[in-house]
Amino acid sequence: MDKEKLILVVDDDFITREALKTILAKKYRVVEAENYEAALKAYKDNDISLAIVDVDLRDKKTGIDLLVEFKRSNSTLPVIILSNSSDMDTIVKCIKFGAYDYIAKTNLDNYDDLMIKIHNCFKKELEGNIIQEFERTFDEEYPIIFTSKVMKQIMEDIKVADDMSILIEGETGVGKTPIAKYANTLAAQKTNSVRPFVRINCAGLSRERLQADIFGHKKGSFTGAVADNKGLVELAKNGDLFLDEVADMDLQCQAELLTFLDSGEYRRLGDPVVRHSNCRIITASNISLKERVEHGLFRKDLYSRLSQYKVKVPSLRERKEDIKPIMEYYINRFCGFQKPYAPEVLDIYMHHDWLEGNVRELRDAVKYMCIKARDSKDISPAHMNGDYYWIKKNISEVMIDKNNMKTNVEDMGYENYLSNIERMILSELITEEKSVRSLAKKIKITNMTLGRKLKKYDLCLD
Image (tube, rainbow, N blue to C red):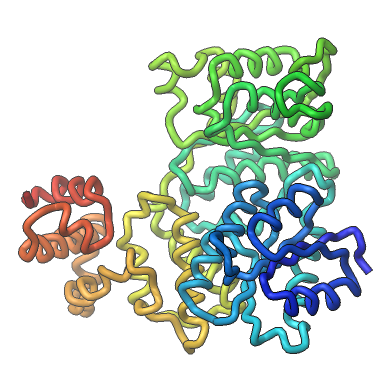
């Protein structure tokens, strides 16, 4: 029995709700709701451990709307989606919005499959959270996978950071959070103890909210402060506080953070009591903090303190040798085994720019592909998202002379050879188009990206 876990069941069908409640109540506590509004109220009034949501709610708001709201409010809440069908588009959409899993109601005959999914979900949560307030040191969702020399060097370099503040810079999705967690793990191994790792994303938070979250607040210090609240620096004591997207931090918050770094002392918002924490600060930014300093948007003295040890993570397009191992890792993870794939699949990913999300984008692309190929013996380009699939025909046409490919690569150099292929593709595509906008829409890239490529190869299109 696991009566500490409370499961929210959301379904507009009374019979289904009662059946689920009867089965689940044998092991868990259960609260039920028949529509979107009732579900939100139940969620706000209770400490929900997991939600089971019918995607086909006969309401103004669907189950997907509820999923989005749950993940917005609490990104770690696991949500299992139920549906009367196994529509692939619906499955993909639910996974995209953060559903833990998806199950068709036709598979609920004996409820064994659902109970197994719930058990595995809670087992994964238990294994990953030694202390509830701290994030997991090892993040299965964003592991560090690489073969490139540059990433090997970064992994070696981070070992000498010791207790210095670490600044990790790189584009969105390159793996800044996993590297921060890796630094935390290394420090924990040195002391052979559990080391807290607490994370906050500074983007989009108001000054007051950020101050309250980082340093804590006293009851009544602002509207909505109904109780005293510990700050993240307190939760991260003897460990690491990871400030993601630190470039967005307000200047006043920056001043308070600098004071904390200098003395280890802080005050909760609205509380005169001086407290102390010895947590290390690890920060990350997808834009250059040095440039922010030059524009007066970031304190120079704080930048100096945060960048005692600086790491620059290269984009995926700068280390394309990592694409294959990353792709194969996620194929194995999402399929449950190393499912065979056509060579063209890797070719397509190798020729993609990865401008939008780097490793994270590749992970999501592989996840989509594995879902589409779940009933196939192997994976082909036809299973890929349209954002990548468009280039398949062009690659097969320009690379058919495989007998001379090795010689051409050796003569031209790898990067020059890839650039030549890309130029050939674009040269062919622009012959049938009248504008950058129409071509960009057809091949599913942004106008800016296409314009940059055309300029790079001195190609003209109005």
